[in-house]
Amino acid sequence: MPLVDPVSDTLDAPAASAAAPPDTPGTPDSPDPAALRIVPRRRTGRRAAAAVVLVLLALALVSVVRNAAFQWDVVADYFVTTAVLRGLGLTLWLTVAVMVLGFALGTVLAAMRLSDNPVLRGVSWGYVWLFRSMPILVQLLFWFNIGALYPTILGVRTVNLLGPVGVAVIGLTLHEAAYAAEVVRGGILSVDKGQLEAAQSLGLGAWRRLRRIVLPQAMRAIVPPAGNMLIGTLKGTSIVSVIAVQDLLYSVQLVYHRTYQVIPLLLVATLWYVVVTSVLSAGQFFVERHYARGTAGAR
Image (cartoon, rainbow, N blue to C red; front, side, top):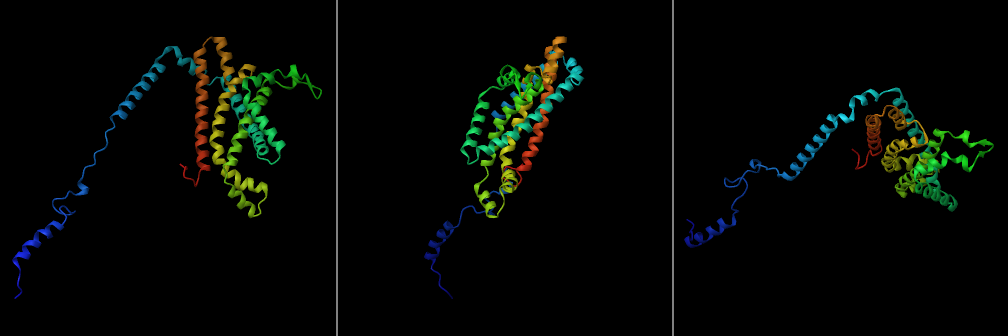
């Protein structure tokens, strides 16, 4: 029969009980994590600010809708009239023509700026500097009065050569090309040089490198500012009304000069600009998402 030391047994018992953790998971005294209630953080200030903003927006919207001075019935009558739609069509045509021609010339200028030839780089830099320094209205007025500087070009009278629409296309295109050149140049510079070195090691020619390697990657950097330029050009075409080009703004001006309904006709032009800009913004979103495939910023 083994002998048990009562003193030793008594001293070891408290030490054993002290070594055990007081509240271990699974014991009756510890709370169940699944039963814990998660209390959301109170965001009183944020909710109060959102409520104030919503109330102010609602009041502003009600004041616009219920204000008889806006003459919404007149806006509805002129919104799809022939004169307004004809002006809208010319505005859209000018926007497309200026963007296509501007980016075509801008791409050439960007290639010249990236060239190893110092003369080409200098000419490109000078063009961008000059046309970005001149206000677009001044450029249009210069081209509109080109006959005072050069009465004839190659035996053709410049007065008969350039009408208001031709002046608008030339002036807006030259102005747009200066900004497009910087957008394209920035997009090309955003492509990692290692990509070009890898393409050269594979024996790809300059055109294939540009078309298959550089441009697909550069478009991620080109599309966002190009979309902004497109929307800016759409609104910027309204300035051609000063040289009697019958765009959207000039068309509504002709109407309210006859009817003296200035506010509702300006609202007609504003609403059409909002509609077209919204469509272009949606298109820009999908184009950006297309070129952002496989990147962290893709949505």
